[in-house]
Image (cartoon, rainbow, N blue to C red; front, side, top):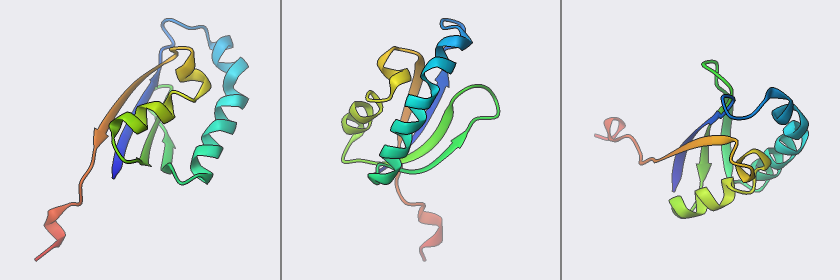
Length: 93
């Protein structure tokens, strides 16, 4: 099943230096999740710090458990929204 994940940096609660310090580890873990097939697509958000991604998992619990392995998420530095997706029916028939 695919999910849309929107994350936003909690920059009002954490200084930029904290994000900078963990960025290399965050990017490394994001690459691992992509290589494992969890992350299908990922983009930086233009409207502020964070990313938008499409991920593949059995259910929302697996999505949240997997995202919790990211260094920013481990430290509570992200707000994360998860939306389950289904195929668009407008292209059939």
